[in-house]
Amino acid sequence: GFLLIFFGKAMSESSVKSPPKCVFALILCATLAIGIEYSLLMPTVWKYVRSLGGSKTFLGIVLAVFSLSRTIMFLVVGYWSDRRSMKEPFVILFIFGAAGMLLYGLAGGLNSLWVMFLGRLVAGVGASSTTLMNAYIARASAPEKRTKLLAMCRGMSMIGIASGPVLNLGLIYLDKEDVCHGKFCLNSMTGAGYIMVIVNALLAILFFFLFEEPPQQPSFTRKNSPVSQGNHGIQAAGDDHKYAYSKLEDKEDAELPQESGRASTDRDYSQPVFSMNQSSMHAVKIVLIQRAGWFCLLISFLTGFQLTALETALTPITKEQYGWGTQQNSFLFAGITFVAIIAVVTTIVLDKQSWWTSRKIIALAQIFLGIGVAVALISCGGEDVPLWGLLTFGGFLIFGLMLQGSPSLGVYSTLIGSYDKGVFMGYSQIVMGNQNLHEAHG
Image (cartoon, rainbow, N blue to C red; front, side):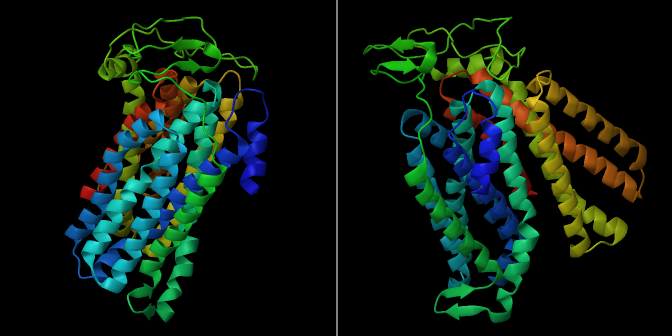
């Protein structure tokens, strides 16, 4: 109810096309669940692996198989959503998520590392639903609304992560009882899995009954079916036709719709020229090369890389330099999450202003990142890292990275045009998925 009231009000401020309030609330709930899952599992997964007789090598395998299965599924899920009902993959992936987390929980009672491995493999398939969330926003909203909506999703994910310490405190109490009935054991390690079984099952039910399909879109690989594309009036039919991107028609002075009272310098890519018998790789060339979509993917890659590096290095640095333990690091990560949420709110506020386009917000983010690098060079060059330097560098770095994330994805969604958003949003998720693989390997 809170999501519907708060975010529904934000979405109704203009008449520009937006997703239905109820459906967007579902998307936000699903994004929140992703953050909660991460915050529940990561603090206990190493303890869980050790309790089953596993090593650090197996811990890396368990983390990597989740990221690998999710990354492999990104394009599959995107392709699926472009050609069939989007509700289908949403519901089925949530079922996979519930099944994977059930296996993860049962691994403790079965005393089996390989059941845990299988659970994370299946859960990774379910987690590929993140592509669907971004693709839905890209299909159901006008270009000038996407940065704000994507930022809202990012904010909900951060709130989910921030809730981790509180939720894990509750799970610790389960260790006092350590309930076991046959192969079912409930403790702080298995409880994380069982909680997410309930969450994924509820999401599957809610999406099955409440989800509304986004507007239809043509596909550059769909054949033998007439297609109409909303207000653009694009229609085509015929047994020998294959829809494709073709030569780009640049519209230097094109503006986005003016319902929100906002003009943009972004080009209008919603109506590419059709040609016959073009391959999907031609579309990739148009979007990633000619329209410079590679730059948006590069930003996504660098954002993920730097966040992963900071997450990996921060705890060893604080332990070595300041002798910090779990409690101090928990407060530190809570502060990082707070800075990230402020960056997300800043993105939403700036995006409402007529002068601040997505590209300008990205440019502003580079200034904050530059300040962070300058502080690091000045204060962190020696063996001893002053606390003020580490906190200042980390604050500017997190703020800049989170500030540029949603606008870059919003720009990327406009470069795709009106065609096969699921597949192309899958490419962006693969870029970030590779960073998760890197983290697991490290």
